[in-house]
Image (tube, rainbow, N blue to C red; front, side, top):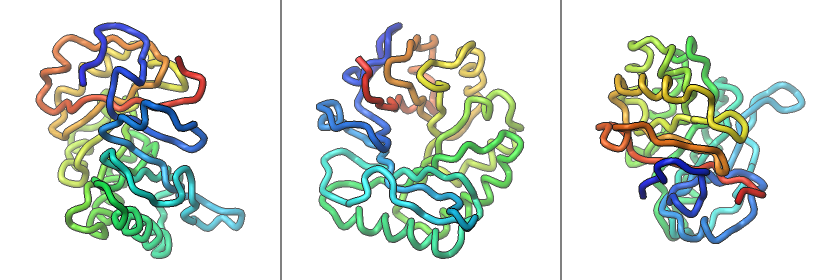
Length: 223
């Protein structure tokens, strides 16, 4: 679905969404074609050990939209138990009626840490079922400051990158300067928009060969 030429981001104008913990049910979600659904978080517990904790949609159920199971990741130091927990959640959701496209990792990898991140993703990809997709969120700094070889390392590891064009509830300043650098990517990518933020699609974006559309981050209280 195409976005408005220049307007406030309204969920009704799009068909792919991030659905995070605490966001109330609404009609937009019922008509979504694709949902990135938060189902867990990986991070240190009170004892400092990394664990998988249930978040968002903890209970698997039938779904009409194509699902990506999103995991908020705060540490790449996964134990075998964490990885097993992710695979278990994937299997439980796949057992429900509806399509599960794969797993999304939401990790704020620093631009200078992309090589290590690519290694982590390579190991995760090897552990996932062969027919399971792997999506990641990305920072705009990756495109503007990342070394070409580091970005290329993600090719073959992930099926898509969704770049977050916002900080908080607003589109980042000078966003066009960041987007201009995306032309060097050879990985399918989408742009993540914040519901309620102002967005103007740059010229030529819709025809960019690796651009696959938008995902809107839903929030309570948005128009």
